Image (cartoon, rainbow, N blue to C red; front, top):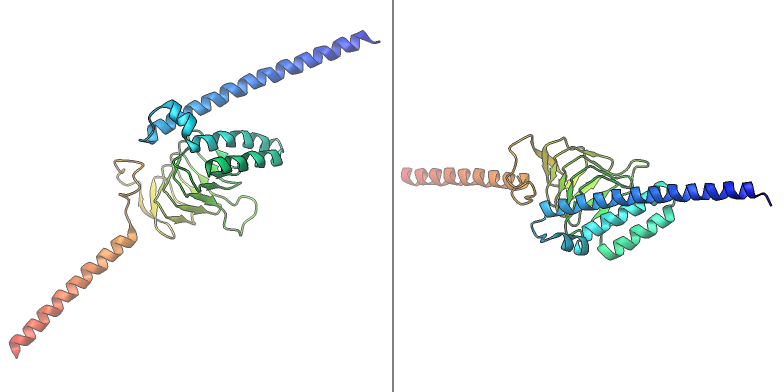
Length: 247
């Protein structure tokens, strides 16, 4: 028996185990730091959050994001089936579907979260906020990069849809129910179907997460039409009054 080979093999196994343990400790520390960062993001942006334990144990958005970290790591290593199993399990538990291929930055807050769908080639920057019913999807006509790219500090209101390989700039707000089909520049607010930009670099809304006090172009147009109608009505009444006097 070649004892030297056995010793060399044992040394190699020991080195591999130490390397694996070192990588595991590093990955665990990174994961804990990222989760801690996400928890603090929920505390800052969700007025209903009462404490760390509540967020860790009861917030489906945090659970979905944590599951995505694992599924994404497996996806990048080529274990697509296992990655998909984890993402579908998380979808069943949380009601939030995040494809393992999606790339997500730090501090993502998915508030409430039911019905949120994030596609395979979607990219999300740091400190973004997404409300229930949001879809970051494709249009069904593209291959390759077919889902949106979000910058940092983006807020997407409840029920909004962002479709296709478009780019949403930093500090953008997309109002509830909007459907974004084209790029939106940084520091903008977009509303409507299809979404159109109603302010760029304008005065900041007092509450950055306010989804109500955002300009509604349809409402503004209806108000303008109503004002014009009232003006015409007054003119008609005046003409009728003058006509009666002449009689």
